[in-house]
Length: 482
Image (cartoon, rainbow, N blue to C red; front, side):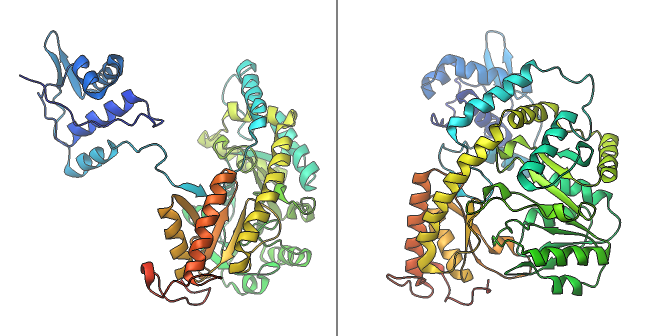
């Protein structure tokens, strides 16, 4: 029997190893019944020659598939497709689709609001932190469900110094990020709905809904969350989720009067205020504003994160609240074995102690200040750019059809730009949310060229006007229209 030639395509520029590409595609051929039980595969040497790779690449792929049970070997007779049974059509189709290897660089460049710029000069600090983990003494069993005591002390000192929030280690809980901390908190609260800003952080609303809570959308004005609308909410409210330092995604800073009013309304309702302080470090006109929690330690629970300063994949955050609440949350975590990973905690402790986090913030703040000026200047002819000088993104309200057309043009050019409509649940606001943290200067410059050209073509600024309906767009309506 002559072994068939396999229809495999390898992408040498991909981050996926060649052996894994071979194994994935052969597995897909078997799943889709293109290769059937008993079919003989080409020899290692023959397939390697067909693909133009080293023989060891094919050997490694075949060994993997034999170990998984997809292939079998017959001494002196070659490699064959094993008897694996018949996969359902939907499963086979899914496996075949998964066998396609995505070419390197095919994903659009994301101008998102959550990926930070990390100074490459600070990589040595990252490496030192993980070397410190490798020589540190591991805990004898599960780590403290509230977090490493030394890290909680370091975080207490950090928020006191940077956010004016004086607290003790007993009032700090280490989390796996903002939404994780929010979910832990909601699970421990009494009955009631959760009020969220709208537009706002959609993951917060999703977390509340996942916890079985009704979500009350509260609009905003130029001072922050609308207290009149909050007061009119008829149902009991257990928590009010806000981003007061730099409202996401409109960029509003909650005024002092609105902060006092919010605390009063929360007290009237016996509700907690949950302060998400996601990127307050990146204020580049004045010093970072004091945390809302500094005004009322009993009524406000503070959520912080390393995602915007160090890296989203580190999955380290912190919750600051009354000691009794923190202890109660820790007991619940212990009962579920929801312990924060010790290595990540230990590494972040080193980053705080050695000033690595402060260095990252200082360098990123300078880059964001410069990039914000560039983005604001490019967008100024097309509307009022939202938000104070802070953070790693800017918002441009636009009519829905215009925003959709610009985003489509950007996708065709290889860029993914955020949508204000995606952050709006009931407000109906539309526009662009343009992040400039996780991109290079060149990528940002090219993306802005696409955005401004598309806006001019839509008639939003000077230059040739795109006719209504051209490129699938609709006539321009109100900014609030979807």
